[in-house]
Amino acid sequence: MIKDKVVVITGASSGIGAETAKLLASRGAKVVLGARRKEKLEKLTDEIRNQGGQSIYQVTDVVKPEDSKNLVQLAKKTFGGIDVMFLNAGLMPSSPLSALKTNERNQIVDVNLKGVLNGIAAALPFFKAQRSGHFIATSSVAGLKAYPDNAVYGATKWAVRELMEVLRMESAQEGSHIRTATIYPAAIKTELLNTITDEASAQELKKTYDTYEITPDRIAKVVEFAIDMPEDTNVSELTVGPTIQPW
Ligand code: NDP
Image (tube, rainbow, N blue to C red; front, side):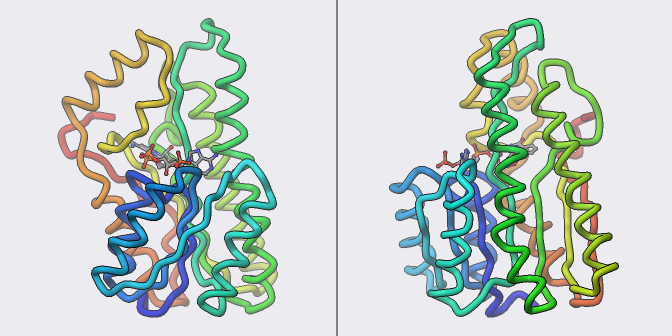
């Protein structure tokens, strides 16, 4: 059941996170939005409230452990708890390893991997204490197979898969009733390509996306599906992409 669930969403200012926030709020969830761009979060919160939904936001950089903790605290303070943590913030500055874009690589690891760890650390104590909760993470088809130009991005997305699966197993062993779901999207029309600085990679990926991309509301529906399952049922992994894309 989605109604009245408190759902924290990182990377909520655009793309998959923003669409998921709108859909879940329209189903009666109380959504708590985190990302770095304040004006986008503010606009989305207003939009959700104008549609009769419940939403609040806080500027959040998932690289900073305190920011994730504060976002979870905001959920508790405003809505009295937290039921779902959607670990969705991410970026994809693609380039070949030989381009040696060291700063970008560090940033990918910081946001896509350490950011997820920070989100888990922020919500897990509450989930354990209340003996329920749901972690949902946006991995990628790049977390399932290798793609040239995306070695570091793919490495973080493989790592997210591992984290979520072990979290599921440990939670079952510990009896904490925590669910986990990992989503592997293919080409989705969002702002994701904007972070690419390598010209050749940018052009190649733009071509792929222009050919195949589908809209992020599709991923929102998958998140909705995972949450909507009865509490005794864990939907672990979902791969979602354009029918015409060979991936
Ligand atoms: P967008 O670029 O539209 O969204 C990315 C979101 O992450 C934004 O809200 C951005 O907000 C946020 N973000 C980036 N860095 C940080 C940070 N340090 N702290 C907090 N938030 C941050 O792209 P998508 O919607 O596509 O991306 C969402 C997830 O989906 C990502 O994890 C991505 O890897 C994954 N994905 C996307 C695919 C696609 O084809 N689009 C395919 C497979 C996976 P802000 O800049 O305001 O901080």
